[in-house]
Structures are given as structure tokens and as C-alpha cells.
Image (tube, helix red, strand yellow):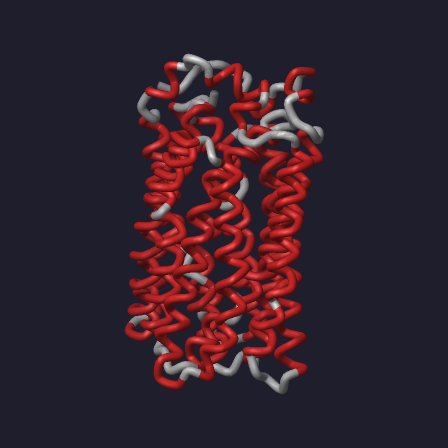
Length: 419
């Protein structure tokens, strides 16, 4: 059951033992993880910004784009149900984090060869997109546990928000780099995809440096973790019911927040922007995500989880804005999509960390992500199908899902006080 402690761990000041547990201070560790994510995001967010145009050039329809990108996001979430408990059980948080980043650094540049594979290009691209997302699944729970240990000492909302903001700098720079390389290549996408090998290699070097300088092999070696893990009955406790309901609400938000692959497909196929211009709008969305992460993270530390009620509202307004025939309105929809993504990937994670015992965070992040996987897969397929058959039906389905999510969130927040 959730604790009734009125001072969440995310707001507790760091003590001297916490600071001594890390080779670097908690803030430097948070920033270190942020810089690694910055470089890695240049890779996979740069590629993700052109998944729609790339798959379309390989012969995919809107439905196929929705299925491939939705399956990729589902894979990135569902496998965490395995990798999260595995991280808690083995305590190999750094190993899993490193393997996951390596998969991303390898798979994305290989997308550059898919246009040269003829009929097999679409299948190869689909496999690489899904495997890259599996890398995200492998590393995410383990990295989130490492990050939460440091963020908890400086304010969970602020720590997660600052990390996400740095992460989004890479998500902004990657599409810009890809757009520049695509424009320089006369509209060809493959040179830009190949060029993403450089930030991928940089991410791996920075991660190895962070592991060495942070001064811990895994959280249990740190005093901040050891105090809670030795003979802690929470390691055997069930996850609280409030966590389960929160995961369901966020899954509905994930289902409504379709992948950018479909939005990029709409922008390219309707001629609103050229293929080289799609990454520019994606970069703008990533900037909006950074601002939203910082703003809601700071608000979370001040007023609590009530700030999360903004999420279903943002998700609900994306489809009617993004899927229009006017560039200005569609661009506004892309920015709102980015803001919703920023809240999902920062402040939502902060609340998960505060809802569950520390010793169960890896498992909780894995279970939470698995529930999101169902939402991502259903949302990706449904959005792709409804885009072709009924835009009005798509708008109505997303609105209904977000209304349900709002009701569940209100109920959870009314009954839960985070630990």
C-alpha cells in the first residue's frame, strides 16, 4: 500500500551520506546521464523523424507505417517487463544500460542501406526499427533506476526534468543534423542516416566515462541504495494498486499519442512539407518536449502529481491539429505532440519512482512500460487504420480514451500520496 508520508523522497534534501555514495555529486551524475542521452537521442530521434518518409519511399502505406512504428514502440515498452525485473534481480544496471545503447548505435546507421536492398528494403527497415527499439527496452529500466538514485537527492521532479531537457537537446539536434545532410544530398535520406553513426559512437564513449566517474557499479553499492536494500521487505512486496491504475491511465494516453511516423507520413504525403523539412518540425517538437519536461518537473516538486492532469488534455488536441491541411495548424499540433511526449518521459517517471519502494523500481518501470506497450501497439494500428478510413473517427476515439484517462488519474491522485 502507498505510504502516507507527507514528504516524498523526491523532495527530501540530500544528506552527506548520499553525496559521498557517488564519485560525482548527484547533480553531476544527473547531468552526465543527460549528456549521454543527448548524444544517443541525436541518433534514434534523428532517424525517427524520417521513419514516415523513409518507409513511404520503400513502398509502405499509412497502415504499414502505423504497424511498424507502433510495433517498434510496443517492443520498446513490452520487453521492459523482462529487463526491469532482470535489472533488480541481477543488479547489473550498468551492463544492461550499455548493451541497450549499443543496439541503438549500431541499428540506426544500418538503415542507410535499406534503400539499396530493393524489395527487401522495407522488411530490413522494419527489423532494424524494431531491434533499435528493443535496445531502448533493454536499457531503460536499468538507466532509470541509476538516474532516480541521483535525482532523488536533488528533487525527483527537477532531476528527471533536467535529464529530459538535456535528452531533448539531442532530440532537437539530431533531426536538424539529418535535415541538413538530407538537403545537402539532394533529398536523399541515406547519407543522413549513415552520418548518425558519429553521435552513436560518441554516446558509447560518454557512457563508459560516466560509469567510471560516477564511482558505483550499481545502486546497491551506494549508501543511498544500501540503506533501503538490506533485508528490505519491500523487495518482496507487491506493487501498490495505485501504481496499476496509474499505468492504465498512462497507457490510454500512450494509445492516443500516436507515433510521429504517422504524423510525418501525413506531412509528406499531403505535400505540406518536403521530406527534408519533416525533421525540422520534429526538432521543434523535441524543443517543446524539453520545455514541458522542465516546467512540469519543477511544478511536480512544488505542487505534486496534480500537474499530470495536463497530459490527457495535451494528447486529446493533437490529432485534430496535426492531421489538417494547413501547415500552421499542423505545426501547432506537432508542438503539442512534443509537449505531451516530454511530460510522459519525465514527470510521469518521477511519479512512478515515488509511488513504489526503491528496491522495486526496476520491476515497476518494467511493468509500467509493458502496460504502455499494449497502448502503443493498439494506438499505432488503430491510428493507421482510422487515418485512411475516417479522420473524424480517429479524433473521437482519441478524445474518448483521454476522457477515460482523466477520470482514472483524478481517482488515483485523490487516493494516493507518494512515498
